[in-house]
Image (cartoon, rainbow, N blue to C red; front, side, top):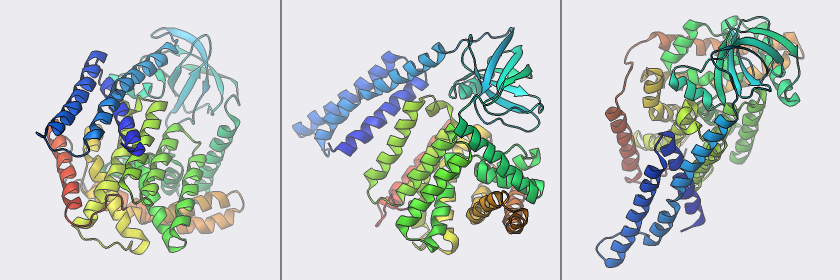
Length: 491
């Protein structure tokens, strides 16, 4: 077996073990499944040698039988990681206490402040705290609290928070600032720069446009109205401001194709990579954004490789590295799941759709064909997950995304330009702000139009229908792959 196959199957089996343990299967069950699979593969080799069964590459089956043991290691790693997380937590629940903590991330602001606090000795762990809008707290502030720590409810929400090492929540405690600047200096500077950029948007643009521009460039959603959030959800465009892999992956394709008109293929790859890294830095390099950037980079890499094993290894190894850092995200992080499903949709389903509809290889004006394929294939791949987790999906969102994605790259470019010019000259930023305002007006119109068009919406999906749906998609990909010159890695 070749080394890249060993890496692929080894990482894959490890992830399977993590998944099984995430389902709370006991070790005896996981060991039995791994052993049963190994015995089955060895049996295939025996049948092949006896001539009663035809199979290709029987030697590989011995390797796979051995690699199946990594299923057990994956389950063990998940259990060890979870045990270590719980061991490092020391909190008092359901009783009034005084404790101190440092603001560990960029606070969410709006009608209330939402802080992630790293609790200080004698206690330990992380908490999610809801605060009044004032006084305003910043990253790195050391604060003394008085309140009651509760275990998050429901259980699904608690599991979602545990993946970020958050084990408790406090609602509107008494709070007193002890000192500031207790965090990492670089992170504090980046977050401060982000706030100044958003302030520059607000000086130049009307509130709704400034809020949306802050969302698509920096992931800031505090200023969104309830009605606008509902419109984005109904139109399937929430990902544009989520800073998830689902978001950045699609934006990477759009930006990559915009650069096609100015630079060579290699140069636009590197320029887009620099843009993604800059994007991560601008948003404070939070863990979710770093993960999203990795997904966007893999998507671009898919457009440069022509060998299937290179792409499949890139995806599986990326997942493996993320799971090593935090195995809880495999089951409990919807952003992680959407990232990989959207990516698989783009790189596997996209070419099948291109062939089925006989779309030409030319990218078209502003790369509209690539945007169409990226938006359609990604949303089709994640549709069941959107229905299960968010309770709605509309096929019209495909059209909304195609229409908006054409305008997102220039909007982001002009948006960053407005933010930077705001530090130099108000009048120059005002001129560019007028231009970006035209793009924003168009995008807001599309979002509100499709958000108000509540037709063809799907609000529920059963297990059988979800399984049948993905079987159909897999069959669609395989059918188009086996009928003519279809290359699964072309994007």
